[in-house]
Image (cartoon, rainbow, N blue to C red; front, side, top):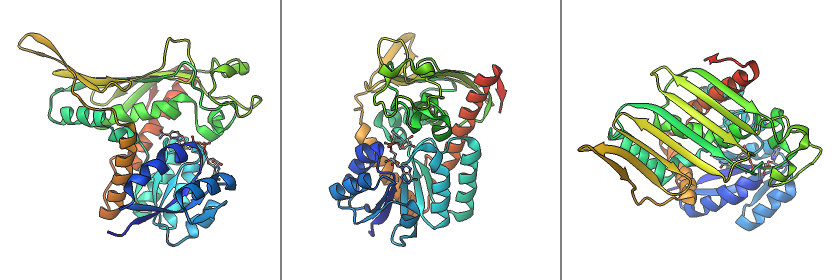
Amino acid sequence: MEKIKIGIIGAGKITKDGHLKAIQHLNEEVEVIAIADINIAAAQTLAKEYNIPSIYSDYNDLLKNENVDAVLISVPNYLHSPIAIEAMKKGKHVLCEKPLAINSEEANKMVNIQKQTNQILMVAYHNLFRSDIDYIKKSILENKLGKIYYGKCGWIRRAGIPSWGNWFTEKEKSGGGPLIDIGVHMLDLVLYLMDYPKPVSVFGSAFNIFGRDHKGMTRARVVANENGIFNVEDFAVALIRFENGATILIETSWAANIESDSIYLSILGDKAGAGFLNESGPYLYLEEKGTQLNIKPQVLFDYEGARIKMWHHFAECIRNNAKPISSAENGLLANKILDAIYESSKSGREIII
Ligand SMILES: NC(=O)c1ccc[n+]([C@@H]2O[C@H](COP(=O)([O-])OP(=O)(O)OC[C@H]3O[C@@H](n4cnc5c(N)ncnc54)[C@H](O)[C@@H]3O)[C@@H](O)[C@H]2O)c1
């Protein structure tokens, strides 16, 4: 089997801590042959650590490298769309970090180019590949939950602003705060489990409590620039209604006065409910013979394994010219819902999609 040759664009935190570590487990399938970052020192450091032969400061030069079959786009959100479009036009397949784009207009452009070029465009939603999610999805496919009518999800941090005053906190570059940063993972998970129903309306509220007037600096993991811009939300909540009547509630924060951080998801069906809380594995709640049952399968939480499986899936999609489960269309759907949440928050009204 010939290895798929990868070029990485963006040598920042998630490339270093997530992708490059995962790719090491797939050295029969993929090989990183190039890396680009405007911060050439960051690219050089990773190139040295992982034996990557070609280093670029301009991603356009990486895209000109004819040996590169596919690229990972792992740069600030506002660059996803222009780089992905250029990459697909140059005949490269794309694994794009989440969110697909900063808004649905940009995401739409990406989907259109994907259709024109027929390159693989996959969103790096690694959570889809977790064992607990796999267990819940299989339970749904076996109809253990029955008709699904409600999904609730959240990713709530007490003091987890990723970085203060860099691109994360600047709306033009990020598209938003925790909703588009971590909430998008949870939204996509519930949509996946519900089989991507069609949204019809959204009501949402987004708040900038800690970022406003630079009050909440202590809630930041890293202070990149204490005078930097913070014009995104730090807390958001929304209710999304779908054509089939199902409804999703999502809440998310980078900073909030709560006891502790939590990541949760709950899906209710008329036969059973399923979900997870943090890393404790999946659960099923149901009734049998007039008795309430709590089922706790022994499924390990495998965060690292999920990213490895995601890369394997990307490679398989390229080999078989198959549509990824985290397709560009699914990325666009999330962007459309996020746009509507922000619009609803601004206008104070329900938005019809
Ligand atoms: N899937 C996940 O769990 C997860 C986690 C964190 C971040 N992310 C996403 O990954 C992406 C990167 O996030 P991060 O935390 O690594 O950010 P980061 O700020 O640590 O890294 C971004 C890198 O992009 C580089 N860069 C900026 N402009 C560039 C350009 N024009 N050309 C080449 N490189 C450029 C920067 O120099 C930096 O090294 C974002 O889209 C983010 O939303 C995903």
